[in-house]
Image (cartoon, rainbow, N blue to C red; front, side, top):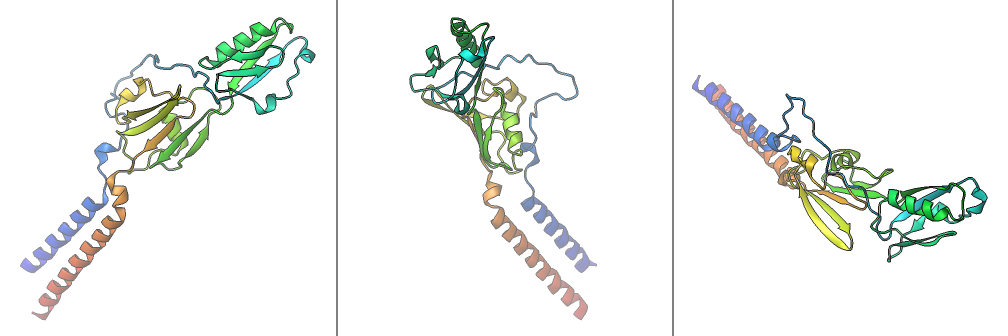
Length: 247
């Protein structure tokens, strides 16, 4: 009986070692851990700021009026590139300063200037090259175009197929370039405070980097150690059983 008890203990220890070496720490996996889900909670969205136009942005500008023949715009298919001085060149009205302004403000300015040449003009302005990048330990790292001017960190990660189980959730890096300056911001996805962050809403050309934890790089070594443990335990069990059968 002592022999069989020893074998059982060996099997139990083997199973425990396999589980411990193959599982990831669950406490670091869930998002928004401090959010009280038992209650209905409402928050005011006061951390969204409209996108402002920057140099090297490409703008799509469409104009309509009661005399459309007066507006000849052969170059609009490729958009208008904002030059290094923050300007674009438009038919009829010439140079328009757009850098630092929202698309809504720019279209109002264009409409106002066009009233000299067009009857009841309207203008629509959109950033054509609005994109964000998601790299690192996610399912689908890529550069993603954004059709509108409002996208959040969680939406961007959703486009990338979410973080892998080995992605570090409490230290996601946001890289942002604006006004010729680069910022590096750490975001904690395990806390609901992310929704109140001024960086929750992304800007054009933002980059999100998800760092893998150590289990990602050690997965090969971990698998090798697990197999070695299994083989060693089986060898011991075989020796013990052989000894029992001989007796």
